[in-house]
Length: 352
Ligand SMILES: Nc1nc2c(ncn2[C@@H]2O[C@H](COP(=O)(O)OP(=O)(O)OP(=O)(O)O)[C@@H](O)[C@H]2O)c(=O)[nH]1
Ligand SMILES: [Mg+2]
Image (cartoon, rainbow, N blue to C red; front, side, top):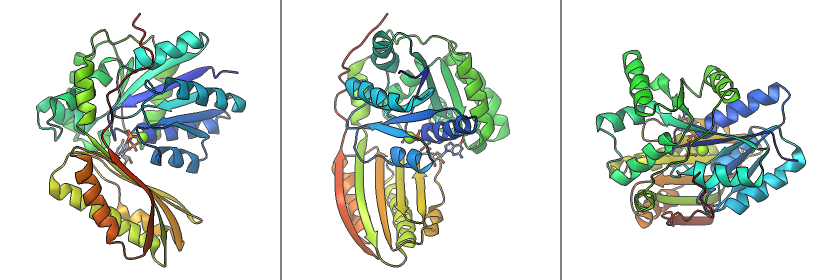
């Protein structure tokens, strides 16, 4: 049996998609609803999937490509989730992916006519402000093209991370957003606070049909994606103070990327042991407290690293592997991979 509703959540790297989905899913669980999440990434070892599971949310993932290029994998995951009979599924698309209405929503609706699909795009208020004012670290025009296309196709836009902006900047930014994307219903707030979740769920209950991007330049889309480097790694660490060692590692990674001046889409680290799971993120606008890792008191920890940074993949690999090499505890790199996303080739594109 198919879920009643599928909420696709798009938005640039680090805009807060996972934070919002996790909070909304947990809120619905408290209302005794059956929910599930499907995450998506160009890589395989996904921090987001593990983080959803650690939050008690049934999660599946589509790996090694975006939903549009891996449509059948998405359909397979939906089929598998049907066994759990979820009433709501949240699907988080890759932060560098766009054109999801034509290449994901419409093809799914053709296969499953009863499926109600919504598309929400999150945007980081600080990043949006810097893009509008021309001060964004993402100077690459093609990356900014993706950023705008994601907003262009959303029927719901959430202006997130308002807690990072000064009060006087908020109203003009909301106005500018609504002016630029007049077709979208705009919500705003902070995914760290329940009020944005409540606002979002209310908007979704009343959401409108999504419109397909009529004009999308795949050359620019591909160039924007290819400008970003991906580095994924899975490590095991053993020894006293493994949690503290990860905190130091995270700090060094943040400092070393900063010192290169590379714009950061998202650097996320997730450590798991018997004592719990901790995720720490760095984006272009903020970073979490790396000290959270010291809460993990285990002698054996698994660490997943997902880095999406604007530089060459080999540069990113060299820099991050160097910091990993300085770990003060025994560490084994189980897997690692550095790459730039390939040209997006959607399995289907339906434009009506
Ligand atoms: N200050 C602040 N931080 C936020 C807010 N929402 C999310 N964050 C932080 O932003 C960072 C990235 O959040 P995620 O939810 O992982 O972002 P994402 O969009 O899922 O990122 P990708 O999956 O990599 O594209 C984390 O450090 C979050 O804690 C917010 O409203 N305010
Ligand atoms: Mg995410």
